[in-house]
Image 1 (cartoon, each protein chain N blue to C red):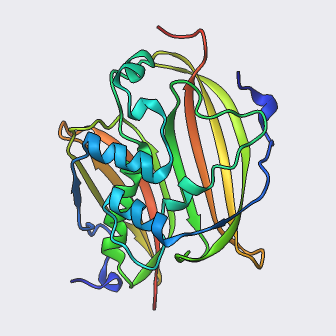
Image 2 (cartoon, each protein chain N blue to C red; image 1 turned 120 degrees about the vertical axis):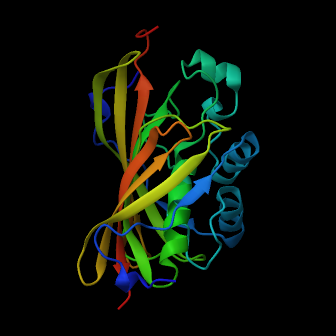
Image 3 (tube, chains in turn orange, blue; image 1 turned 120 degrees about the horizontal axis):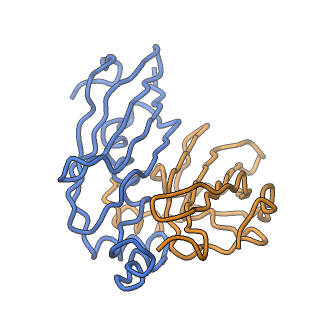
Length: 132
Length: 134
């Protein structure tokens, strides 16, 4: 079960290095042209540090929104430290019963501590016992 | 090809047409580490009320990203990229990604984005900011 008490919960800060082999696989799988710059959505696949109390994926969970902001480009070989935080949790009626929205924010900072990107994911899951 | 500097409000971006299949969804699961069974297991996805497997939203967003990065080339940087997943995309669909210039300043292009399926339903909407290298 997931509720408002999770708002504000954070992951540990995790140091991540962008590896050329993994970027190449991502580019091949998506059809994005390979370059020295990291494909814009690639970092979302890396920043999955767990947040205490939140077990993902929730059953039947889908992705509702994704937002990304880059303060500067990221290059293959760069390292960054990433942290995730639960920004919001709320319920709303959906087509098939009540659903829970979970908004998770991720930040990426370079080794000097300067912010490089932020990402916000809105995930939608059916509330257990509701619908059908 | 037209330089980014010459794009004006209402100009359309070059489109990208994309036909996802099960092979690509499996490949994306492996490349992204997202093995949520709603993308890979038809029975599971049906039980979850989704009517069968669905394509990762992030794979659809990556197609929009590919449309943008092919267009931008080395002339600029994507500084903001927001999308909303509006309808489910399934293997076998044909998706057309498109966009136009909503606003511009000397060095920034603001683009409205959308992706539509073969039934002309909008599956994704969004916005991008591109900083032009002057």
